[in-house]
Length: 540
Image (cartoon, rainbow, N blue to C red; front, side):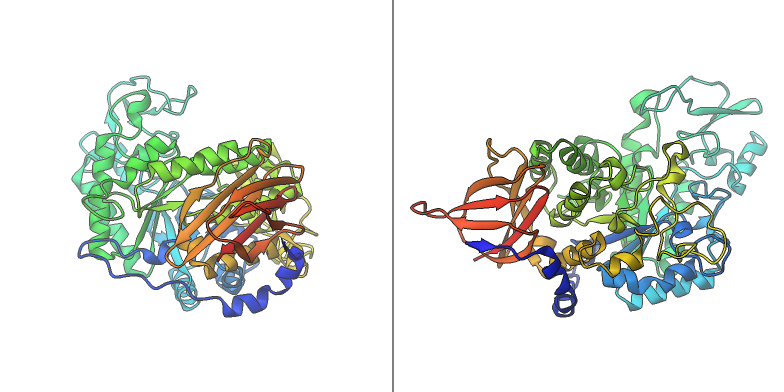
């Protein structure tokens, strides 16, 4: 019988384990004209809201220098790339209404401060991906001001105008209009009137967006997260504002341009939909390995399946989504699982603060195939602010310690710290080997050291009718096979699995997991998994 040691014992070994962990695989050469993105395959990304991460000058707003000062924390966590939420000049706290794509937000620092952040991140082996919000600009962008000034403006056709209101509403439901009056005409803005959509039918707009991408790549960034990727070109009301052929054509054009400039620059698309609408955004994998549109896409259905199964205690939804992943995604593409992001309730809030479920969410994410994205603060189990705050409550400052202002700033934080931050902060969790932060660190480093967990395929194992809370699967790559078992239920579960090889080496396990060979049944193993627990074995 193989019995797991307590997780805290494994966590105490984490420092020694990290020191001996193999470095990430180097990118393999790509075919001429193709992507060179093996660096991103299986890497752990971390989404940062700069405003809420760390303040260096006491004005209460996080900034580039504050983030730079915390890069060692991120490196030690095991992060290999950062996705920075919008950093361009903007009048809003969130930055999704850009008014100057060439300048960084002055509240975050100077261009020199940003350049230093990029250099220091690269020195630590951490890449930088920027939120590139090009579906729309802010209403105060000089382009729109000029466009709105006259029907004969040279930039009139940079946005979408018409003389009347056709009465379209947002395609995801509700009654919010997508056409907005200004003077005697109406302009299109799918999100709201403060964010007018650019007209990507105009070749001048497409050329300018490509120029801006090239500019930031020349400044050292490693790619872009592409906001609202399914809404670039609209054709009519309802679903005709989503997923149009013209939108796909633009992404093929844009991706080809980026590959020509920097084939190792990542493009990761936000297509907030189901699998059948997400997968086409890879484009043709026959024409180009990895796809000729967007080489990486966020897996929204997987996030919903993980949290939905945790909420219900039944692994059926997660198992179904894993099967869909294997069946629907083209071989070799880059897929990005995550638990939550800046638009969604934080994991701890979605799971009603239940510690067992929150801890299990971390091991679900980090044992799945793909390139996992972690939203800042999730490694601490931070909750949301009050529901009535809306989006700002999902983006509160990160507490670094239990001092008066949480180590985030010497001034007044731009937003309140979350409830419970005096105990739930980076310093407190670093000092507690049983903390969620230590669990994330251990899981990330176990993942990085295992080729199968980092890069391997996934193969579902049969589910047990007697233990519906359990999901088990194999992660496989050349030279390594790993068995992963999760119990999503509130009660212990025991399942039998027939394996071609014995589960001999324990890579990660919660306390009291056991694996016992069943007498007289060749290759059959009885796996006992406590409530809300994970076990990961390397097979002989």
